[in-house]
Image (cartoon, rainbow, N blue to C red; front, top):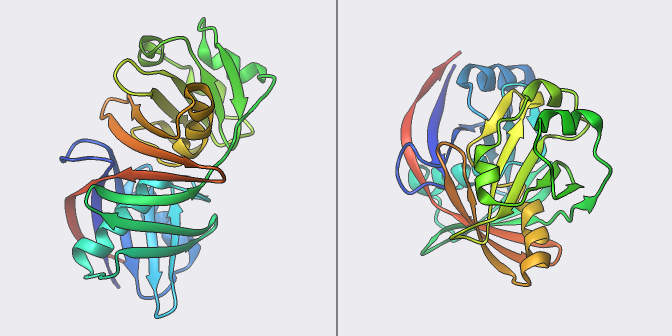
Amino acid sequence: MKIKIYQVDAFASHVFEGNPAAVCPLDEWLNDDILQKIAEENNLSETAFFVSSAQEIQLRWFTPKGEVDLCGHATLAAAHVLYEHLAFKSPIVTFQTKSGELVVTKNDVGFSMDFPASHPLIVDAPANLLAGLGNVLPKQIMASFDYIIVLDSENEVKSLNPDFSKWLDLDLRGVIVTAAGTDVDFVSRCFFPKLGVNEDPITGSAHCELTPYWRSKLNKSVLTGRQISNRSGIVHCEYKGDRVILTGTAVDYMSGEINI
């Protein structure tokens, strides 16, 4: 069996920026163990698989450790593959996913993804979360589907050196560290050691949590976030109550075939 595979740098204007994702269009769903082995072999933070029919496009995402319910950058990568390689014509693509219906619109500035907003709440921090921060003192700690740690400055976020071993057994997906930005509205870094991804370069889904928070702090609904990983990338965010619109661009890195 041969499966087409594309590697796409999402939330990027040039190769070697943003977050790389693998995308595999399928004629029909394979067994989950095969999908997981492909994701492990790719060894990227996410591999997206989709199956198209006349009625819908079903989309799933796998990390090297398991399937996840939501992934922004791999959704962006999947949309890019549909339009750039598979001759998809409509300006709007609707994916059916474990997080419900996700709509992506192709426009002059890239791809805009309509995702569910997640409003973080202040929580008491578990001991292992604080232990992973070392001597860094958080300004605020919240939780949604990740823990969100607010620090005092962009430099503090940039210089953070977490102890990932302390975060392997957290009850939530991962840890997002954020602060107000110097030349953008906010900056962030995202850590998912329990998923086999110590630091994710650019995390679209994290901005579903960050956008409502920074909207409330900055009193503005259109925001620009920069994830300040080594690769770095920009996510344009728009708050719409129970939805968040995330906009970014993507570029091809490579394409090939998987032989199974």
